[in-house]
Image 1 (cartoon, each protein chain N blue to C red):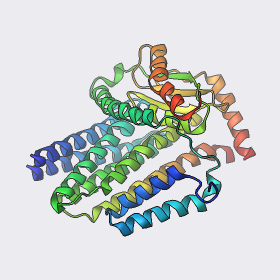
Image 2 (image 1 turned 180 degrees about the vertical axis):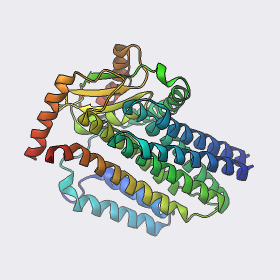
Image 3 (image 1 turned 90 degrees about the horizontal axis):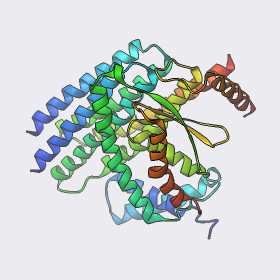
Image 4 (image 1 turned 30 degrees about the vertical axis):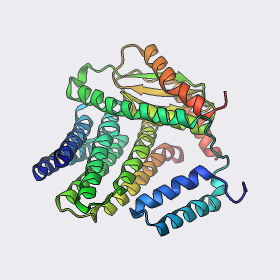
Length: 163
Length: 89
Length: 120
């Protein structure tokens, strides 16, 4: 079972993408999408060494909702800063210790940091313990690091890693 | 109403294309130019989508999709070159 | 009613796209410049694409969702390319308004990375 159907979540996502691409929900297309979703992970299985485990799917939905709101807020923040006085900005680099261990969770966190207010993830250290973050306008770096930790890192740890 | 909005939006996005083109020409460093190219292709997607609405044609969607895929690959390849080109010297 | 909503989405999208490119020109150093395009332009194009999806659903009297694909793709790829660009800039040691993370550590890190990459 595991050998012939390695990644069920990936299969569903691929089928969904196929349906979006052909822009129809004709039964034939659904069957073709599911077939592609089964075939592609099977043929590329050596590029996916470990299966993705989601421990708390409902927390993931809640988290995505929070992120969508934060993205919209981030845009207004950046727009205000760009239209304001660019020479009054106080940019800073912050080195943030990570508690996450799995690759997927770390890349998720880096992407979320880039999409949310005034921060871009810049570099992951080689031992995967520190993430370097660039903030556009910040006065209190400690506070920002704590916000990122409590708002994004803790839910991600609950979702992707067994506590 | 809609055609007026599309007209204003086309003007704004064209101005955005001009601004990122300016940064592409005079950007002092290589990452600046790559960032300008990245912005340029995203702006082009916006332009194509607006053109699709203006002409009521779904044909432009496929073009936008191809530009999105190729632009991302191009940006990442150029960054990889910058990260590694320094090593070969 | 729907027409007004679509027009508003188009206008906000275009304004955000414009602000993103304006940030590219106005801000002073590379590390602050990268904030404009990655955030504002992505959301701007996203809302334009959603407007387009609504417009074509309304025009053809059937649900047209394939614009969502481009939106999703942009939202996934924009942070990745931003991360790569910042990494490249740090590697080249570009000038920054903010204090760079300990110059000394940075150089050591680069040497380590060079060894690491050669080892690949």
